[in-house]
Amino acid sequence: MNRTSKLSVLGIILLLFFMVTGNSVYAEVGVTDTSVLVGCSNSFSGPLVYPGTQLVNNGLEGYFGFINDQGGVNGRKILTQYYDDGYKPQNAVANTKRLVEQDNVFAIVASQGTGAVMATVKYLTQNKVPLIFPFQGVPITGEKTIFTSFTPYDNQSELVVTWLVKVKGFKRIGILYQDDTYGYTFRDPAKKTLAKFGLKLAAAESYKRGTTDLSAQVAKLRKAKLDACLLVATPPPGAAFLREAHKQGWTETKIISSGPLTDEKYINLSGGVGEGIWGLSLWPDPVNSTDPAMVEYREIMEKYGKDRDKTPNRYSLFGYFYAKLAVEGLKRAGKNLTREGFIAALEGIKGWESGITPPVSFSAADHLAQDSGFMVEVQKGVFRPISGWITLKDGVLIPMKQ
Image: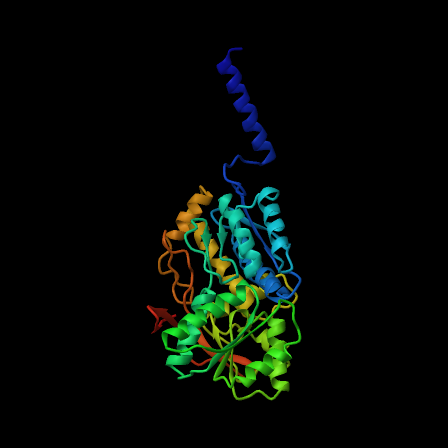
């Protein structure tokens, strides 16, 4: 048998093997003809356990389950793998390496926590693994393989401070912040924004991650006679702060929630003492909104969500929204799915309408999904809008249409 004949026989044998086993040869990591594997490290324990479980179990899994029930994306079912990091950066790194090197995921989707996510950025970038829509707000720019999600924390800080000064006329603004990257990303932009108006932070107090006793910080901030106090914390210490403020009778200052605190779960943790606080919301009311897109979110989460607690909330809404946006990218990438093609497809999204947030657009130079929000106030235990959608352009507040 000559060499050509041998090669022909080998080709026939390989073809028969794959026909019998149902497998297929596909060049891209995490992709077969019938599936694409994505995953993330997230908080299924620790201080962000509620956001993490809701984001993944009801948000991501809810929408991916819905899509898979429709036959998947371009004939591929979306498979998932998740690991718990407990909001610890070292665990997030170990989990991410496992996802990439052992599970061979196509992309990391919606990992959570500023410290945890940022600890994985260098590794993922070096290995050219897409990191899409992490639940954290530290700006990440200039990285081809990373697409960020909600309005960055520094933009949130500038947006809120500008609104407080220009719309409400406040001058004495203070802050309580977590003593880490998460807290600094609010504190430092607040200082810069106030400086543009000829003002300074009237008071600033920090706390270490995991702290539950905030009595000293509350006493010092109250003594500063503030118009407003920005509260930069995760839900448990944020709720502890509200309880302590209530205990000390601190009512003369408007407290402003930020980041993950603008959710009713946080108010519930406080024991109902958060009435009247303000905050910046990035999402419509998940429980009461009658917008068609929000009704659909609740219906899909109820049917396909995997957590026992299916109460609508902004964390599961985050997961749902960004699962939907990820699926849009997969659809546009087409049947011949590669990481490079997926990134190009996302960059091609212009004016994508979700009915949930203002339209989303990306480009090769801009991988940020959102730069807007609206101000809310707790009324009868629910965050109610007190402004329309707003963003900043060159430091000026600009109204937006959803």
